[in-house]
Amino acid sequence: MGTSDASTNAQHRFGLSPYRLYRSAFLVVLVLLLGLNAVSLAVYWQDSQRLAAVAEGLVDRQAPASEKARALAGFVSDLPTGSPDGYHLLPIFRPLRLTAAQVLDLGGECAHKGRAFIVLLHHLDVEAQKLVLRNAAGEPRHAVVVVETEQGDLVVDLLYGIVYEHEDGEPMSLGYLADHLPGVIEQEIRWGNTLAADYPLEDYPFTDPVTINWQKNALWQSARRALGWVLSEQQVDRLGRPFLAEEPALMVLVASGFFLLVLWTPLGLVKIYQCSRSAAREDAS
Image (cartoon, rainbow, N blue to C red; front, side, top):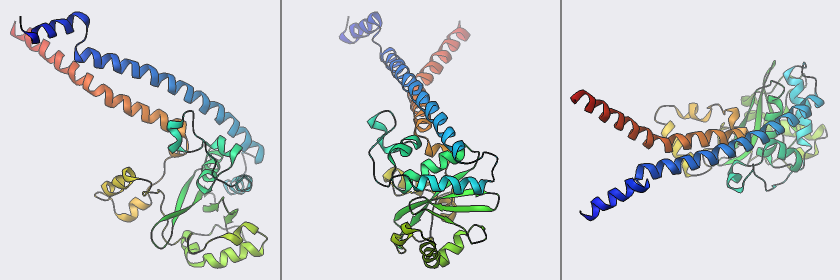
């Protein structure tokens, strides 16, 4: 008996065929990811309960969306400003950044505060999403939040404590801010907003905002180029950000599901092949 035959017999005798090994590895990964997701969702649920209580303690749930936005903007703007180091569950998830609950504890920069603001609004049934401001060179420099209110889209800057609205409460449009930002910032300073005095007008203009920072890394840049084949540049720049992007726990859940699907695909293809062969043999007999 040849060496290859002996090896094949040994594989079948001890269950060491490549298919069995791959299936066993897949089952191990499945169990580990199920455990990870269970813990992740438990933390997410606990954080959600806390965030909902905080939001409802700051403003009446029945209040108009614009009032909710103003109340929560004041609260989040007053959180400490800095670059805290934190992550959801494990260091491997550090690129997903702080959770909204962690921002309440640690504070953060514009993107961190924007996340906390959006999630708090979500618990009050108000929709909002981030908007990235770019400098003249097209580099992402700052993040603000656009809130859907009964008066129209309301722009809020959590880092500088600015709710962009006219004296009568009407929201300032993005076009208006692009044309009148220096005067708006000067008015904020006159009204006593000391944070606005440090606003860098040239770095944080509203002339060319985008909803997603496509320059994060090579993967995002590739996705931007791919979308450019089917969408116009303006459509890509204004693609809506899903709420999922503000919840690391949900991102982990979706990513693990996709990873399992990729791992399961070879097993599924092998199973389909085996079933087709069995059916063929039955037809031939």
